Amino acid sequence: MIREKRCDMNNQFGKSLRSQMEKAGVKESELADALSYDATYISKWMNGSKLPSERNAERIIGQMADFFTARTDAADEAEREAGRQKCLADLKMSYAGDRNYHIFQDYNNNEMSFADNLQMLIQLTRAAFVQALNMYGGCISITATFDLFRLYGKEFRKLMTELHGAGVKKVELRLALDPEELAADHNYYAASIINTIGSFDYIEMYIVSRKPEQPRILVINDLLCLQVLWNMGGETGAVFSMEHKIIRQFSGICQQVMEAGEKLLDPAEPESLRRTNVQLDSYSDRRQWQFFNEPPAMLFPKEIMDVFIANAEDDSYARYLVKLKNVFARHTCKARIDLVLYSSKLNEYLTNGNISVGNVSHHLTAEQTRSHLTYLSRVMSENPQIRLYVIRDTVVLSEELRRAPSIFLDTYSLNIENSKKQPNDNYHISLDPRMRGAFQQFFENMLGMPFCNRLTAEDVLRYL
Image (cartoon, rainbow, N blue to C red; front, side, top):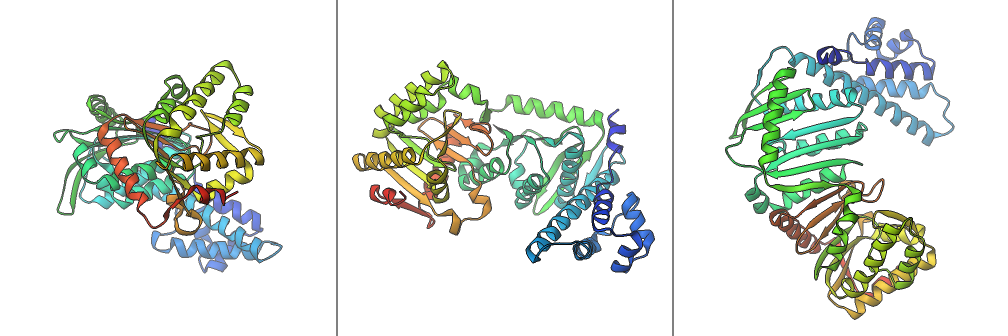
């Protein structure tokens, strides 16, 4: 049964501590002396019957890392510090996992309980995430029939960062947002969506429109459900439960809300993108906004397209490339385009020649990459409506912005691609004019930022 499964948790901190002690050749009594603690504390930490207190945990773990590092035979200072940081990270992560598990179990004592502040909700959510990571092989399902971005604020972004750091494999995130709020604060919502998608190697993100009368419910896997009763004047009240029969009822309500809402954003399967010609339609449009967090897979010269076609993996892909070649020559080169590239990605492309075209990875020679950018420069000279901007991300941007996914807009659709692992493996699309409009305003605001610099056709050649 699920209740039995929930109680069958591993002592992660104890295992990590034992591993570090064995690696350093340290006995319990030696560690106890180094920390000025009784040896019985060390035994309890190792067998999982007790954890260091939250107030002292950071200090204790830091002292442990220092002690273990001093007992290892590192070749130099850099190697020693790298070992210390790894030890510190392992102990901190395992401690956080065990602590959140205990928090979760402490709350799990009634069919329904009451939470009277936002921090308690965030603490419950974090604990449920840790449970899900351990129980479901790193796969987490989150459904919220309300604006989770707004309610949790900066803490939502922090929770997503923590999930990434914990090694989550897949996130399924379903949200309901008020379209009027989306239009009123386009920058906030576009940035929140981009950051969430960019935080993970793989995420399926569904967003539907929310109606004011719908209940505000959050369900995480089959581990936690809660309903927000009020959130006014800085005060929040909610009821929550870990009982499976109640979670199942709440999940049913969530499903009804998600099915009834108009679709604002959906994940797209890689194979469906080529079949439905989504990318061809976008490149054919008379007005385009393109933000690449990858090499610019557009406007290849005829010679390179012919090589792609000749080496196509199958007839279907060859036909797609022939269409793409014609679209580039007849439509894309004559369109009005705002194209934004990361300077680092452009330099990386010139160095390694790796690029994705129509969901397939290719490797170009140094001569071919130079030919590609030379052709792009020539097209810009012939069509001043193609405007290229470069973000010098190696200097001015944080890691959060640097991992933002690619954004492709035309006059009808929004496409978001996070191709960290495989081309189009993490792809989202919207045909809703409100969502598309929010991202267009976000994009155009970005063009006016100090870190976004417009290049001339001649400037492009200076990269070669």
